[in-house]
Amino acid sequence: MVPRSRTRNLQVLDTELSADAVEWCPLSQWHNVLACGTYQLVKTPDGVDAQSPMASRVGRLYLYQFHQEGPLCPPLTEIQRIDTPAILDIKWCHVPVLERPLLGMATACGELRLWRLTDSEEGRCGLELVSCEEVGPERLALSLDWSTGRGDSTDARVVTSDSAGCVSVLSLGETSLNLLSQWKAHDFEAWISAFSYWDTQLVYSGGDDCKLKGWDLRMGTSCPTFTSKRHSMGVCSVHSNPHREHVLATGSYDEHVLLWDGRNLRQPLSETPLGGGVWRLKWHPSHEHLLLAACMHNDFHILHCQQTLGGGGVCPVLASYILHNSLAYGADWSRLSLEGPLPCSSQDGVESAGAAIEVGGHLRIQYESPTASFDTSLEDETGRYIPENEVPLVARTSEASNPIPSSDNPNSLSCLLATCSFYDHMLHVWRWDWTPEETGNTMEEGGQGRAEQNNEGQVTLRTCPGEAAEGEI
Figure 1 (cartoon, one colour):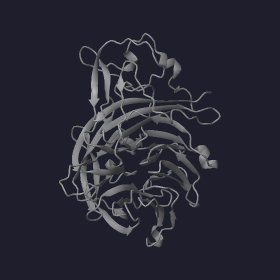
Figure 2 (cartoon, rainbow, N blue to C red):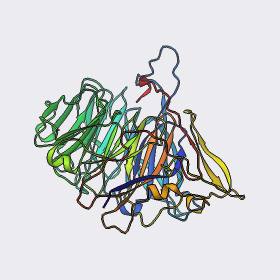
Figure 3 (cartoon, rainbow, N blue to C red):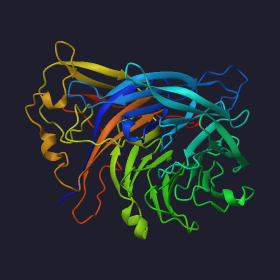
Figure 4 (cartoon, one colour):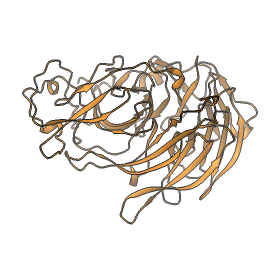
């Protein structure tokens, strides 16, 4: 059987401020809840360094709900927005706390904030602030991770890293965070910190000093258990595989993803170049070999790591999502089960050039961005959205050339994802359908190019402006 892979955009939202973090709630009752964090540097007066912690940075936390209500309804609905300090990272606790979901937030004023998801009298959920802990003065909190990655609710803790090069570990009480340990881990910014989900006394950190380090909290933090200089630039992403013990993924400004065996950190298991600084990595919540990468200047990619974990080499790119027009920062997998075709595909790809298309309805610009890109969708006479499956076509050439993988195949996989990009302040929700080869081999599809994807009945104009490196987080 020929393997098939296809990405389809479902919805695009303007977050107004620069978007850099997005997270689906991992708890079963709230799998349809999505949080998005934003970061905006306010224009500084003369004499103030824009990169200084004293510069003014503002943010906003968005909360959305995803509903599959039918083809005429956009699936994602905003239910709350909260103005905050600029947000560098957000993570849901993997287990309920006092029977409710808990969201952690790392802010530009050096704070860790905890938000509890509650239900209102109207039946809608919302976030309320329950704790705020400063990790240090004049610094930015850059990342956070929970020790609960494998669903263990005992001794829940948070690790965070900051712009002063420090790493902090905090314990979680019923309504507060308590600092357990803090140490100088890196010479420059400590971009990332993460727990080993299999042994939560082990902590990993990566910094702008190009070093990946490990720490055993039982042995103290005066000296790392290992230091790797295998990355040639700043290490900005680390994620422990929750399904495979000892497996660790790291990403760097050097544009490479490295896979490691935690028992032997002298040499990585594999090295995969992705053509853009790897800001975030996320293992799939249930498929141990799938890895999602947010690659800053080179979009979002899904890697298949099965063969490389067994014998090294380069991870094949199964799919690439290329419809963002700015720095690719935030990315996450949803745990929602997708049954049957989803409503409306607002960015479905037409691979066959020159397909004859006739549509009825009016074009409406969905958003405009500073990158001069825009999308249009179809509306009928009353202003209702016309989904793809109702657009009359003279020819559906793309359906024949790139059919959607069949959900009847037991090996087929359909995933819901959310990604966000920085300067154009855009949040995208999209679907990935994949049917592997029966032999278990993987395929590489679309991972290298940046070809435009145009919808049936839809027009997309895309520009790729050069974005200054000093403008990055």
